[in-house]
Image 1 (cartoon, rainbow, N blue to C red):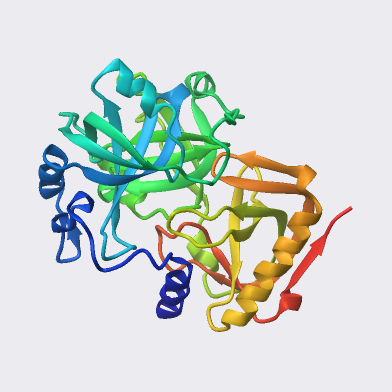
Image 2 (image 1 turned 90 degrees about the vertical axis):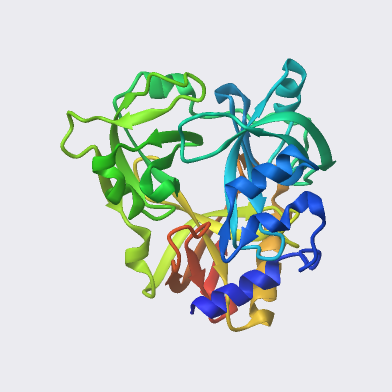
Length: 344
């Protein structure tokens, strides 16, 4: 199943992602299935590095970019982006997810598993077509809410540094958790999309974005409420609103999913596809697209995806969660009839 999954993912990747890479993509930083931060910084300090914007949350001062191995799509690292001048800091706030930029600079000396780039120069290579850049997204959750609470229920967004950094999604807000040694093993065992409850205290610094630590006074500071890997390989029938992840510089067409309500305000998108039948996958995308196009007035932007509130979808398939860092769980269908779309 893993080989089939990788094969289907390669179908999604744009042909321009080739084995050739110019100097600004820093191919020398990727060797022996690892990425060298030292060699990556050498490129940053010289000709610069082409990076993809992963996420921008100006209200939280959270700016994350991705370096990707130019000859291996599946190998990448995330880095925080800081501007060295007021002009650069203002420019960074205008960036959007999947924009491609050329960055020159070096690492800021910050004790964190995730490297921070202090940019001396930034130039725009290409704008993403994911969403209009003039349209600002209004967040449902705000950093002030995190400051006013002692616990939250959310889902895992990412795990870095062997569990030293846990990133949690609370509604549509992304919260970094710096993990102390006693919880690292538990954090490192989590998968993206796991529903969790955390009890926390606010970390003294930095103040933006707000970082939290597990509460040492709480015995169950990290509790898994639902682990997505437990359903791997099981037949499932699931229902949720139709979701579209728009095409990006790395994906040649929109990807459709259903947003499944896991309770407590936690929704987990489940991508719908077929690994073994490319024609069925095309037909499924066409079925989703036709329904989506009939109801454009009920589409809303939700951070990194679009949700169509008029369309409720029930999917029967095999649950697939092969990798703890997988973008979303998948429902693997065998027939077009496995997708039932209801709308008012």
